[in-house]
Image (cartoon, rainbow, N blue to C red; front, side, top):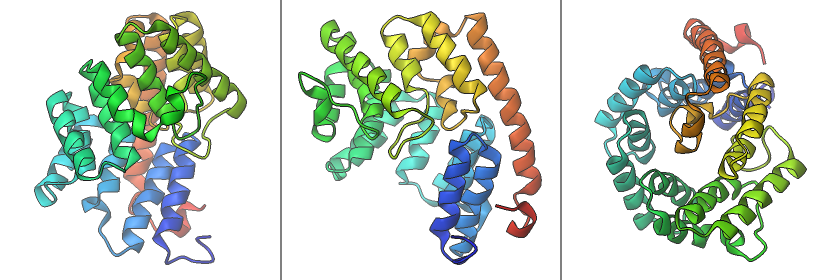
Length: 275
């Protein structure tokens, strides 16, 4: 598509996302930035650069990038959201996404993001109220999980556990696992980050199986949105486990190599990089 239509920015963005889904975050970051350049922008000043740094676990650089971006675009929801993530500022996350949902209640993506913060704040009933309008199938007596709603399913299940509704939590977690087994990896058509099966297993208390799955997933090359391993509360029970520490070390080492490649090549023309 790029060879046929080299002036279409979305072609570069889609190629970048595809590389990231394959675990090649550095190369994906390169093509994401190309989409900004082709669109007439400057790579250094665009939001994709900041998000690339998040994906590459360059947290301090990502925070500085997002803060600089917010000085130019102070109301940007994504930048504020990632500043909140990188500084563990739950209040900012709730405020930013709460206002975003209030201004556009029909936009499912903002509801999903808000629910992440409500989980972190243990606002369990709010999680259900936020997600139900955009993920009705999860609330059925026989829950229906899809590529798009699997993200929400993890949070709904956590909310059920938080509210003491264990039967519903277990039913939804098991439905999520069944769906993943049918759909397998690494990325479906929707917003699947690659490790939701690990999260469902953790919710079900099957920690050894969760570690087995996580090790296999990381070994297969999963890195897309793997930065969630650093901050999602679901992984807290594993943080002191030697196997989890080894996984984190492997991911950090690999992404440090990819970051170095990205820094070295991000100014290079596409013909020197190759598709």
